[in-house]
Image 1: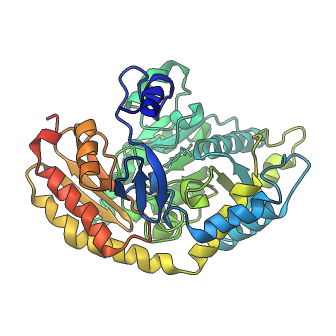
Image 2: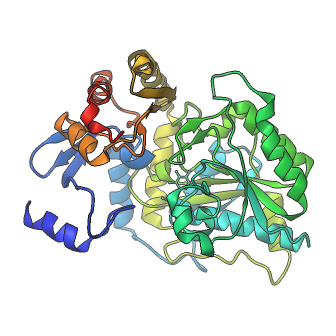
Image 3: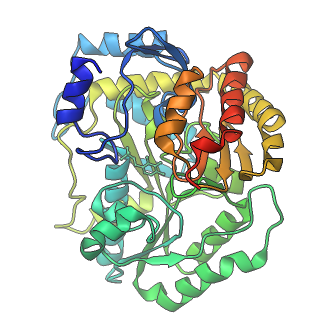
Length: 428
Ligand SMILES: *Cc1c(COP(=O)(O)O)cnc(C)c1O
């Protein structure tokens, strides 16, 4: 092991990892297009887009140019009492791709923080209206981030929750829908949600959900009718609907935003991950005008949030260029081609004895295994096969950059096929 890796393991924490028995790390020297180039000269194909973010690939010339142009003007200025073109132009862009009702934007610094802000807004909104609603209703298997309020609406049975349980506000969890995205809609799916909503509606400040795709909480794709019904019930009982598009936004599911599959409009939407094309940390929480008005018109209430790096000009400029690229429309064809190839080449794995299910939606593929994966070994196996895929629990999933070509995508798929055949990569 080289001296840098030694230092790394001794002193640096990695995501969801231990300081004493950490997972192995691969040192990346640079990244270009769909490739991560390791320090030892090995080139691997990226199947993750750095957790759904680097949708146009790494070192994209136009994204780099946006950063370079901005950096010579200013990297950052405070957003309190100051504004600037990068933030204004980004917000104009966001409004142009969102439904016209969603028009009041709070720029935050990470996905989790945008969720915190959305939850604050919902609480304030109901407080101002003297309704004193103080709990959130969500569904099981969800994931909304790692900060405290965000954790309080993540799946209650996963380990993050157990660790911090005593500190977490108690929210309401409906059973997650069992009707899959492409399957038959089972009307009984909504019952658990409906019952909780009816029983507790006087104290529910908002419903919060990931639209269609439940991400790291289980990588499930649920039926659009569920989201339609949730919207209908929230309207009927005047409860705000917060949609967490942090993973799904910007084309990943085949629509610009995943809620479009259900033809609904959220009251509040949170964006992140792919917002800057995987270059900088930035998120946005967007609300309807009426919500912003209610919480703004009641002095002394204001929206009490203001990160130091709010509206960071570098991040805003590159986000703007990212959306410019998306607006040129290539992503639709790219996602269409990725989905088609994934279905053709990966779905047959469904019949493998170690495989429980294979699911594909847009640029997302999930192979759910029957056994727990030996992540350390399987990750090494993938790197040895020239690809970067990070499995977890029983799940191997792909969220490749939209720009991936069919030969490289085939390599990702083949690597998964080989891994599935290898009994040693599972813990059982
Ligand atoms: C990643 C993610 C978050 C948290 O975003 P961070 O930028 O990691 O704080 C929240 N919700 C969903 C659905 C996510 O996928």
